[in-house]
Image: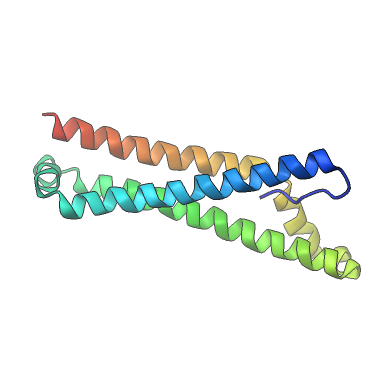
Length: 136
């Protein structure tokens, strides 16, 4: 997650909005991935159809991959933002290689975008397989 810039009230409002939507999206991704796996546990007909079609491992792998990607990006953002916080709290720390590296990571929004796209691809692929198997 990007670092918040100080001083500009409009930027602060946009950042707060971004942060809230980011939390909501990550929560939905994880809930959806876990929910997809739970569906396989409680819906015997669906589980049986997937087993017969030989797709159960792929569907489980896709759901778990999507959840794992979200855990990975949450961890990456957590650690990167901690280093930025440490640098704000102790300005001398900003001269360290660790700070410069992690501060640079926080500015790479493309990482979040790519992980969200990959998560979406995993989940839509799993849904596509589920729909295909269940409708045949």
